[in-house]
Length: 142
Image 1 (cartoon, rainbow, N blue to C red):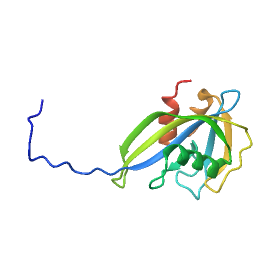
Image 2: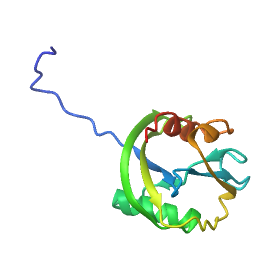
Image 3: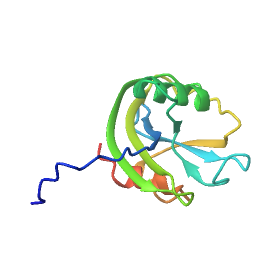
């Protein structure tokens, strides 16, 4: 146990917050999105998500990202996992992983993605995935 230091002054730590969602359809297939060349990681497959805006409620922020990227409405959105790491740019990044149910399968992509697929977990893990998508899918338990 560390000794008590009455002169200790805590240092503030700042992190960027990102979010990713595993969205399931009625057959429990997962929505995967292929990143466009205009966005980072062009050609790789990922999960819907993005950054949390300053002061934004996390659940509302995740719903906003899902709508922006897919125009899907979801239900039962729940946080299920966390990941933190230091980026190549030396930013401290915390990613919250969610699971949700899609209300429909009528996906309409924005500019960030070129294609989408509904796949089983096993099929999804065979794709060329972003590092974050691989992490959340490999730790996902139905």
